[in-house]
Length: 452
Image (cartoon, rainbow, N blue to C red; front, side):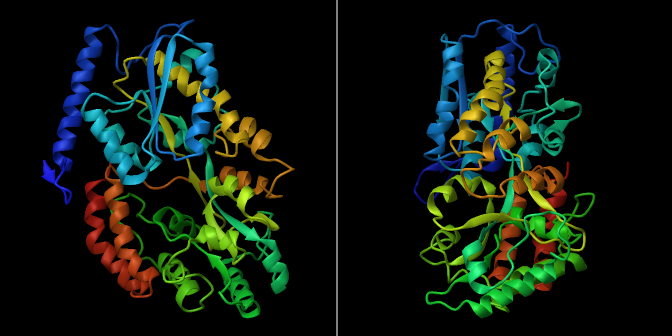
């Protein structure tokens, strides 16, 4: 074990993986001794009643965590002998990832839990997830209303390892009042709008900045500079984070360099986007809600917050198209079942309930956009009584232009290294070429190590 700054101990990655493997082996042996298969290739008939305990684990904070509990109340009513327990770390990212590994290693894995789609290779190559394809086939569970890209992302060697926790994208939130004030045309609400290119986007952002002068400043756009948001810009311009066979990074290509230059320039050359210094003591969300930001690029999962907090005329808008056309990021984090679940039928029932009746509760509450495109998104998420008027374009963007991220077995390490090497570029301290060279030196070995 390795001591941290607080004097407490934390497991090294190698020790943790060893414990994880041991824990899964012990769980499998225990399951076999009790006559339960931890990852069956065949399944019997669906039970008419469920009992025992089923544990669900997530990372949400309030109010979404409370809404998630409410979403499962119907399952509790249907099976009163089943104890449905729901827990949350209230923290996502690496903290959640580490927590899950600790739970698995100690044979305390929850029966159903959320992971990032980019984490799937880590869990799949270690056989930590239950294949639900036999259960889908047995129950004739219809997958047609889920986005094809999500189901494909969860499919591995003929098995299916999860269903969507939510389906959303990274969208443009557009302050139409500010665009009207500036006399500048806002982003289009139709995907086939001609001329909405990277160049046109930059021209309009400069026009806006020239016409709207305030103190404190009002900004034209705030791109997200994290790895996932960067993906949509790169792919739209014919580039990507990794090369085609996922053995190395690809930010040194000409299309990638053009994209990096554009995103850096909106901050430092054209000064139409807030810098890190501008965001000290505030946030992009706050700027938008204060009416000081014309375009906010953010996860569409923020729509519930903005329906409450953005008290002005705002709408959705399409992102610009690069040389390869319009591309969006498909957020398709899966809910998965543990390979070591001791109550597999209850876990499967919980997953189905979540995807059907539970998701209706969450979508109606504004907590999620929905995991089914018609049953949830078009039936509930699109609400003519609420903003934005063109919420349907976000659904179109998911279905027609959404792509899932590249994957490695060590994606957290790759992502952290990319963020470290690209941050000086976003801060104005490094050129795209220098950033790409630094990425090649430090990130490429990690990508090669994580190929699967």
